[in-house]
Length: 147
View 1: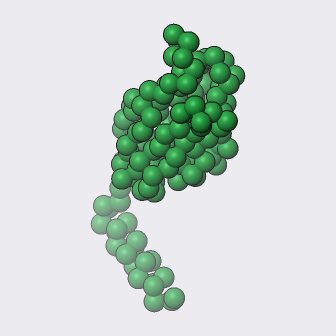
View 2: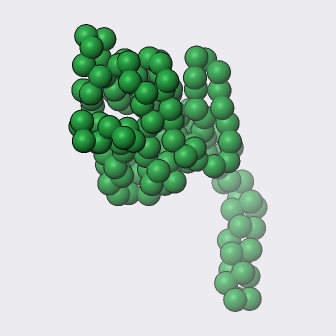
View 3: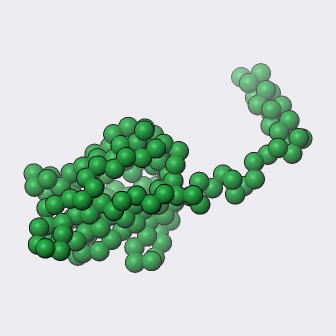
């Protein structure tokens, strides 16, 4: 244990001594985020159970912005529990108001048509299902695929 700590301390000292430390802004992945296609629940023509962009592919280590848009007249309780636990949230945006926090939400709920944008960094590869709770039998499911 002492040997590992000593090696780590020596490596850090070498980096600092050479001035090759990474600038703080280079570590901010959120500045180069990619906009994903909107995940749309329902439509304005009265079909509350259609989904646009049911599956969304991402790359681990990259920053993204995803808009989840409710267009139908249903109450949509959007659950993506495992996905939310395996990404790093930068912020959640609702009507240009930002929510910042240190942990994932349990779910996102739409009582009326509207949108919620999430800005995040994909962390852990895997396939993560999402669903509109209670509407799964009507096809309100999909998945996030993080490679």
